[in-house]
Length: 326
Image (cartoon, rainbow, N blue to C red):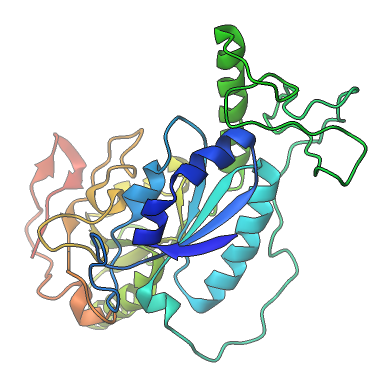
């Protein structure tokens, strides 16, 4: 496990591809802050999600979590370690400067089931042992060098089942497919987004990571004014399972996504709908943006946002995808 922020992560992204190729479990904590370069090291921003989603060259599966509270940090950290070990690859936990510097009193953490995963039946290790044996799940039996009598061979080049370098194109294709099959395991263990509100709210506030508390409070204030408001918080931002949230997006009259990035440009795919709309092409309707700050506050979240009595204009001919704004 390693912890860093945007600049440090940018310097060492080659390690992500290495972990994917050697199928080594690794947990990376990225505490986001405003960039580029040193940027504003004492401020907070949600601007590294897209970078983390695509870091590393080549194609390989990964999982990305984004806790929304101190308790969620503990619970999801347990899960990241278990998932990295189970999938033998990189798993990320995204925080930010605000959450990294936060402290508060909490009730004792519950350890039971904190890292419970849905796993396929483990296949026995082949004899003789082959580190990268072709297994239906894509997760080959792993031995730690020096701990058993089995010879463990690993290489950053493409390799055969035993771990020896190869340039055989047929074998290369099979190895790529083997590694990509791990996505089935990652998808089976996706943490569903947390929804709060009525069945079909006039306004649905979509958020991720540490904006949760401020967004929840902003929604509570609007509900106290008699508005119909719901919230949808993503504590896992990759991979996504549309069946877990698509109905909520379609049921809402207006969908507004919220993160903390540059005011002139959405800060992440969750704000633009970049990976919320896949594969259903559903685009969040509005975007309440904000620049870097010290602390996330409710009045920063949706300052000036008001619901119109008139139905907003539809996007792409879809009545459930609506354009909105202040």
